[in-house]
Length: 106
Image (cartoon, rainbow, N blue to C red; front, top):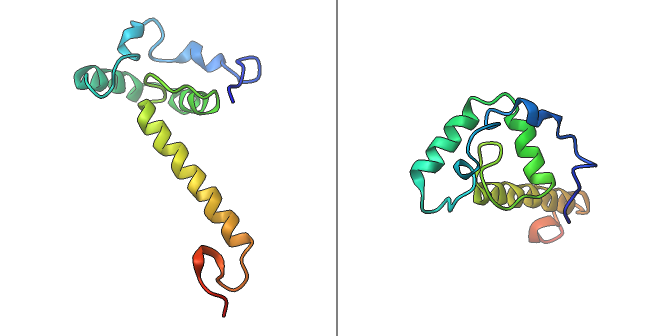
């Protein structure tokens, strides 16, 4: 589900290192253009609002382009790992004496 910019703070964009840079530096086929990927990540590495940018891309969610120094595939892997943590935590909280994760009851 996509969230509106009305709900998410976007004031950080004023301070983004990519502001004023060509849009095509951050939106391209990340799997094919390794040089452009390197240049985009270099811009992000000098940015003071990388964390806010990454959070924005994850919360909105944006499935394309370089945001917060990560590619869309890297952000998807990050989301997947977070979902796995939540699922594991839910499994542990509902378990009794090791029953989570398929362990038989004692």
